[in-house]
Image 1 (cartoon, rainbow, N blue to C red):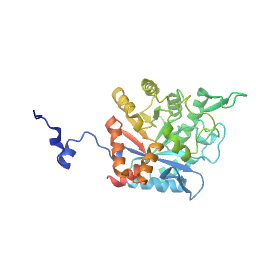
Image 2: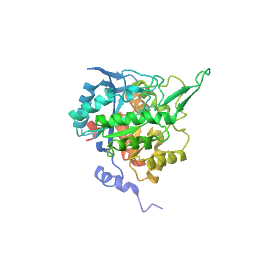
Image 3: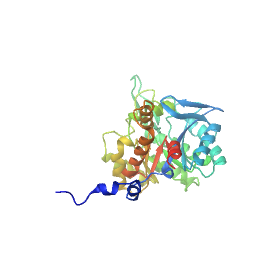
Image 4: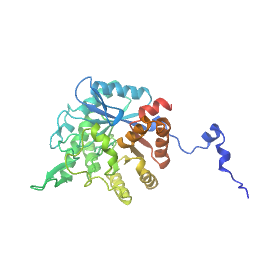
Length: 329
Ligand code: PBG
């Protein structure tokens, strides 16, 4: 018996395929991450992330302008502070690198949406995302003070909003941070600044290259006491529910490609917009394979981004944002 219905019929030409395509990805969906460093005229490529740079504010502004001119809607800023200390105080000072970058970008390209990463790990000498209490006499024994950290995160978010950030994105994974940040923003007249929460952030090894880029590898221990267990799925619903109840406007899943099932799960269960973060390790893997001639960067880039959309993501944070905008517009 030959089949009556032949799905292949609709695959015969480019036009036909395009007419019945179920998902699309466009540059309007993309958020471009940038690493802001101190100094002037500074631009240093990150060894494990070819094509990604640490840049001083003057160069960040140029990069932001280029991104905007290519039609990208938003950037996400990470800071490499001048000084690190145990509390990460350079994360909230008015003259901090991110605060300066926000002001400068908003002056030069006011329509570009400036989102900021709110976390302490790039600013603390120990590289953890919260206040660390070391247990005396026990090497590598420590705990993170959740509630004391919330107060510092409030200061960071507020300092970004004061500098002109359009949206803040807490990535620390302390419990209660979204509510704490929402409260601080509201009390200070920033009730219109949305929060994109790194709601479901796994304790992943795919962040390796980022820790070179942002110089924030933990000096002892790891982040498993605050980031999610990579084996858990139901817990993602719990994290996302809490963040929504605390006032998150966008829920993010991170990393991206290894966690497409989680994006899909959240899409089914939540009405909020969902963002996927294609993290540093995903970028480096694709770049490395492409540089060896083992994969086509262009085709893999498209396939990886469309997979996020197919899984149900509305937004994608990707280091490939500019490449995509150049190649597929
Ligand atoms: C900081 C933060 C990290 C990333 C984004 N924000 C690193 C981490 O949690 O260790 C990773 C992004 C990437 O790998 O591209 N908390």
